[in-house]
Structures are given as structure tokens and as C-alpha cells.
Amino acid sequence: MTTTIAVLASQVADQIAAGEVVERPASVVKELIENALDAGASAVRIEIEDGGKSLIRVSDDGAGMSRPDAELALSRHATSKIREAADLIGVATFGFRGEALPAIASVSRFELETSSDGDLATRLRVTGGKREAVDDAARQRGTTVTVRGLFFNTPARRKFLRAQATETRAAVEVVTLLALTRPDVAFTLTSDDRPLIDVRPTARPIDRVHALWGRELADTLLPIVYREGPLEVRGFAQRPAQAKPAGRKGYVFVRGRPIRDPFILRAAEAGYRSTLAPGDRPSLILFLELPGDAVDVNVHPSKLEVRFRDKFFVEKVVEEAVRAALGPLAAAAPLGGVGDSWAGLGTSLPAGAPQELFGSESLAPGTQRLAPLLQVFDTYIVFQTDSGVAIVDQHAAHERVLYEQAMRQLTGDGASAQRLLLPLTLEFTAPELEAIDAHRELLRRVGYEVEPFSGRAVVVHTAPNPHPRFDAARCFGELVADLAGGRFGALANRLERFAATYACRAAIKAGQHLEPDEMRELVARLLTATLPAHDVHGRPTVVQLPKDELERRFGRS
Ligand SMILES: Nc1ncnc2c1ncn2[C@@H]1O[C@H](COP(=O)(O)OP(=O)(O)OP(=O)(O)O)[C@@H](O)[C@H]1O
Ligand SMILES: [Mg+2]
Image 1 (cartoon, protein in one colour):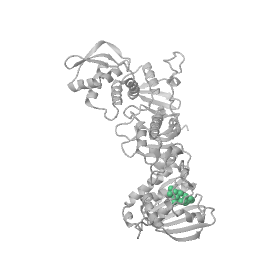
Image 2 (spheres, rainbow, N blue to C red):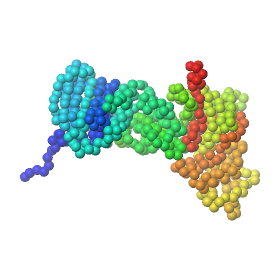
Image 3 (tube, helix red, strand yellow):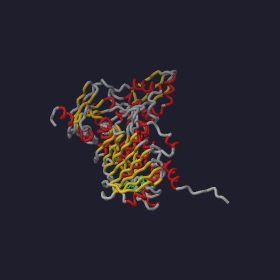
Image 4 (cartoon, helix red, strand yellow):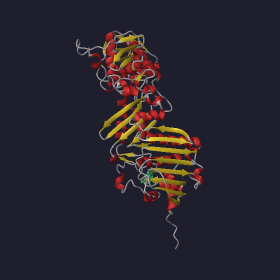
């Protein structure tokens, strides 16, 4: 009897494995950099030619390998990183399968040069999975892997490679990702001898962001530092007012590994609720740290996905982390060409209770330390803070305050409304009457108690009283027109939409003169809001002119 089943030759098995691990030059770049980082490199140099199609070379100054180890490294399932399945839990190295090198070597002309002591080095050549030679070589401690002619022996796959520019872009992206996760390591990438990335080691992640993408991005980011239970979220969230509809950066790292997870990014965006302009997408860089047994990293052939034990919890905490980052008034955008705005963040504006700033005049008259407020153009309120000058847009600020108040009222019992001495009788169009009817309960909760009258008229018995010069009838009319016109479509949530519409219509307008007491009350309430730095359309409520910047401009520093 003949058998029809045969065990594949290891070379064939390697090639099949390569199909999962090595998709394109960028995947080779990724595996080789990960190996270098796992070997403790402090500098990694990457060279590619023709988008990596003709050459990929990754050199490191890591631990290197002895000759026997180097020979073993090219066998499938040979790894120094785990010994048994249990070691997979909480594995801290990028690699753990012992697949990458043999897979890459099976579909390329592969050369490995390595030395573990800087004395005797080994050069090992493999072509299409076939061992060609093992020689002595001379090099310092570390490893250089050179991969030529990727997929030369699998023409079908070589055909799938994209244009040089596309493959180069993918390689840049991989280097960028790994450079983000290890700011303490130097990275250089050259493509056909052109330097594309060159970043020095640094202790601060923001400096790495700056080095990779420049100040235009780095200066728009707010730090995220948040912990709940076993999960720590760090990273950067872009200021809402600086988010744009296109070209955002969205990166998620779990235990230092770059992963693709649209759900986590979406959860982070949910943290922006009510501060983003319609269509804007903020840049987000998120580093999640959690215990090894809370996440399975071995669920994807190129390790681009992980599985969380409690995904819901992770998403919830990420959302809260972003919300907390946008919280302090320091999240307000600085004015002009600010020096090192980063250094000043977090100290620029006191985010605490208004008492700190204003001596809580309204709470304890007579005992206050008052920062003088100045209204300019009947539109902005200017005052001094601990670290600079703040300029508040009175309409945007009031809108933010009223929005948060309205959200509390809409989700709670409602407002304590003021009964009107003379009820208002107002006329509306048929669609507007329908909108009033559909939103009757929400209107009541923000303070408007309404009753149908006759024909097209309704009677308004109570109204909110957000400020002394509030025009209850006009605000009601505008609110109803907005509701009927289906505007404010950008906010998904109906309550939010309603609260935003109400806040926009009820807020003090620009051009309205304010008395000192009114300004004080407005600023005090803004400083105790949850997201004080932004209005409900993604515009800032406050801009700040840091003292540093003044000193720089006047040559005092
Ligand atoms: N740049 C390097 N410096 C030092 N040792 C290396 C280097 N690259 C590979 N090695 C050694 O070779 C072994 C095999 O590498 P390979 O990438 O194939 O597998 P791995 O990293 O263990 O797992 P994975 O397949 O998940 O990447 C590693 O475990 C490591 O011991
Ligand atoms: Mg590896």
C-alpha cells in the first residue's frame, strides 16, 4: 500500500511558515528590529534598497550570538526567549515563536553576522532555506542580518510586492512604531542611502514624538497619565481644537507591543465627547500597561493583535484616561510660537477649584485674593494665572458651563426653573410644533415647561435663567428652530445634541458687556467644569500666553 500523506521537508515547512510571518519587506524589517531590541540593543540601524525588495539590512549592538547559537537560530522553533508554554504568559520579549529567522531565510538570500564577545564573529549564509556556509568574521559585539532578493524563490509572492514607494512607506511605518515604543534606543533608517529616520535616544516619549514627526504634531499633544486597577494608560491625546479631519496618527501599544486595535482607538475618541468639531479625528498615541496574564499576545501570526481578558474594562479605562487628559484647563491651546509648551503643560493654569484663583469671593466675602479680570472687545475675559495670561472667550466658556449643567439636568431630575410672572405665548410652524412635542420632557429638564395653546401657539410657563440678560423667548425660539432643522447632527447622542443646542442658544453672546461679578462667576464656573478648555464644537474656550513666551519675546530669558 502506498501512503498519500507525507511529512513535509523542513525547507518546505519553513516556506509555508514564511507565508504567515513575512508578508512584505516591512514584515522582515519588523522581525529583525524586534530581534535587535530583544537582544538589548541601544542602537539599531536599518538600510533598505528598492523598498526592501533588493536589500534589507538591520544592524544592532545587542548581545549577539555564539556560533552554536547562531546556527541554531536558523532552525525552526529555535528560540532563547521561552522554554515552555507557560512562559508565554506575560512574555516580555517581542519574539517567542522561534519562527522569524528561518522563515525569512527560506525565502531570501540571507546572511547573518554576529558576535557575542566582540572577538570571534560568525558569518552564516543561507539561500532559500539552504545552508551555504559558516565562516569566521570580524565585528564588534552585536548582530547584522542582511536579506537580499526577498521572495526570489517564490515568484508568485514576489509579484504581490507593491511599488517601491509603497514598500518604503510600509518600512518607515514599522520603524516609526518600534521607535515610538522604545525612545531609549537610537534608530536610523536609510532608503537607497537617503536618511529617512534618525532619532537619538531620549528619556521622554514626547521627545521621540517630536523627533519623528516634528513640532507641528508634538506641540498639539496633551499627556495622558492614568491608572485604574491593573491597567495603566499613558501616552498622548491631541488637543480637540487642533484635530483635523484627515491625516491623524493613531497608535496603540500593549505592554510595549504595537498592535492594531480600532476599538481601543474608538474608545479613546469617545473620551473627546462633546469637544471635537464634526469630522475631526484627533491623533492618539496610547501605551497600555497591564499584567501579563490579563492579555494574550499569541493570537496573530505577525503579533499585530492581542486578546484582552476584559476588553470592556480596557476600553472603559482608555476612554476615561483620554477624558482626564483633556480635563485640566492646561489643555487649552497656547498662543503663538510658544517655546517649549510641553514643559509648561500641567502648570500653566490652575485646574483646581476657583477659590485658588479668586479667593472664592462668592463663598466667603471679604477673605479673597482676587485676580483682576478685564473684559476686552465685550467678548474676551483676560486675567493673570500662576504661569501666564489666560484669555477666555465668554461665549464659548459659557457654552461649556451650560452644556455640562444641562447634561446633569437631562440625566437627573431637571432644572430648578423659574416660573414666569407672565407666561409667554409663542407661535411656531408645524414642524417646530412637532419638535416641541418630541422634546417636551427634555425641554422641561432644562427649564422650559411648555403647553400647547391653540392653533400654532404654545404657552411657556417656566424658563431657565442662565444669566441676568437671558432672553427666554428668543432662546426658546432658536432652540426649537435648531431641533426642527435637525442641526447639531455631529454629536451621536441625542441628549448631548440637545444639551449642546441649548447651551449654544442660552449662552452669553460675544459683544455682550459683562459686570465684574458676572465675569468672576463665569470664570469660576468654567474652572470647575469637567472639560473646561473646550466648547462643544471643538473650539477652545481659553487660550493662554505663557509667561515664558512673554519673557522670550521681551528678551528677559
Ligand atoms: N539580533 C539578534 N541578536 C541576538 N540574538 C538574536 C538576534 N536575532 C535572533 N537572535 C536569536 O535567535 C533566536 C531566533 O530568532 P527568531 O526571530 O527566529 O525567533 P524569536 O525571536 O525567538 O521568536 P519570533 O519568531 O517570535 O520572533 C532568538 O530567540 C535569539 O536567541
Ligand atoms: Mg524574533
